[in-house]
Image (cartoon, rainbow over all chains, first blue to last red; front, side, top):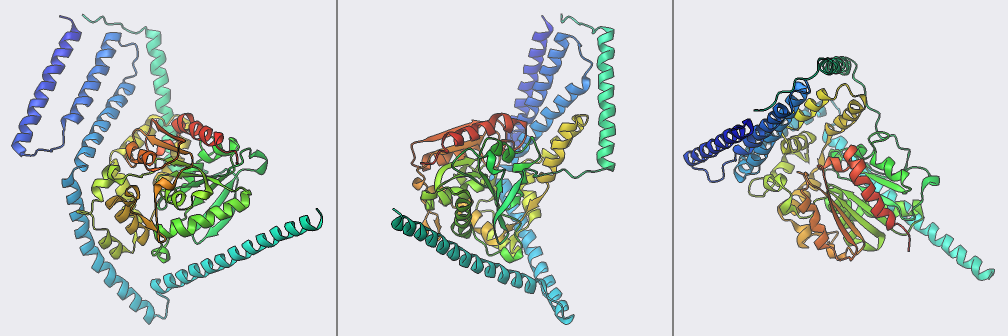
Length: 175
Length: 363
C-alpha cells in the first residue's frame, strides 16, 4: 500500500470519528442548530494535511517552512472565522446580544442623564454655556444656513431666467 | 513509497539566505513603523469644492482638459460608518483618480461627520433635501442635463431612492455593493431584528449612534479580521508598497463616524426591520418610493465574499427596476475590495468605468 492511500485512509477515519463525535456532542447538548464545529476543524486539518502531503510527495525542494506555516495559520483563522460567523448568525446569539445591549442601556442611560443634568447645573453656576446650549446654537446656525441656501437657489434661478430671457430678446431683435 | 528529494546544498543555502534577509527586513521595517510612525498621504487627486450644505460637501475632481464624457458621474457613498477618502486613497490606488483618468467629470458627495446638532437629520431629508440640491449644483457646474448616479454601500439605497423620486435627472444608475433587499443582508439582518434590537431605546439613550458602537458592530462581523490583517502585515513587512497600502487602508478602517440619531432610527426600522424599500412601502418627503420608476440603464456590482451586503441583497435591485438595459456582475472579493486594493483596480474599476463610458453620451 502506498503512503498516499495510507494518508487517505487515516484522513477518512479521522473525519468519520470527528463526525461521530460531533453528532454525539449535539445529541448530548440537545441542540438542533448547534454551530457545526467540524466546519472549522475539517478544512483546517484537511488543507494542512493536503499541503504537507504535497510537500512530502514533491520532496523538500524549499526550506520555506514559514510559508507553509503562514498558510496553515491563514486556514486556521479562516476556519475560526467560519465557525464564529455561524454561531453569531443564530437567533440565540442575536437575542443574547439584544439582551446585553438592553441591560447596557438600562445602566448607561440613567447614568448619562444624571451626569448631563449635574454638568449643566455646574456650568450654569459657573456662568458657562452648557453642551446643550452650544448644540442648540449650532442647530440654529444650521437652519440659518439652510435658509440662506434656499435664498441663494432662488437668486440663481432668477439669474438663469434673466439670462434665458436675454437670449430670447437678442434672438428676436437680431434674427 | 514516496521518493524523498533532498534539495541541492547551493539551492538550500540560497533559499535560507533569502529568507534570512526577508526576516531582517521585516524586523527593521517593523521597528521603523513602531518608533517612527508616519501619516499616510491620502486623497491627493486635485479637487474643487462645488457646494457645502451643513456638514456635507460636494467635490469635483480632475481638470477640465481631461474630461471626455458628456455625462458627469455623481458618487454617493455611505453616510456615517466611515470617511469617504477610501475612494481616493493614494496615487495609483485611487478609484477617483482612475475615473478621472478615464475622462469622467467626477463628483463625490462627502456627507461629513455629523454632530449632536444634526441628530434630527433623517434619511428622508438626505434624499429629498440634500441630494436634490447637490445634483442641481453639480448640473450647474458641469452644464449637463443628467447625471450618472454611482451609489456605494448605503449610498446605493440613498441614490436609488433619489433616482426613483427624481428619475428625470438620472441618466444611469450604478449600485456597487449597496443593500436593497434587507431580508438578505446577512448578519446585520439577524442582529437588527426587531424582536431583539430596540432601536428606539438606543437612539433615545444616546441621541445618536456613537462611532464606538458602529466600530463594535462592524468588527463583530468578522472578529478574526484584525488578526488576519496584522499577520499579513508582518508577512509583507519587507515590501514597501504593501506597507504603504496597509497604512492608508488601516487609517481608514479604524476611523469610524457616528450616525445622526433620527437617521439611524429610520435606517434600522424602515430598511433592516421592515424592509420597506424593496416592498414598495417606503414614503419619503410625502411621496411613495417606487423602485420601478428607475427606467434608466442599471449596473449592479456584487462582491462574492461580501458580508455587509451579500451579493443577493444588492442584486434585488435588478428585479425591482423596470428598465431594459440592466446588467449584474458578481466579482471576487469583499465589500471593501470592490473599491480599494489591487483586485479592485484589476477587476472592478475597468468594468464600472467601461459600462458608464458606453452610456455617457448626452441625448
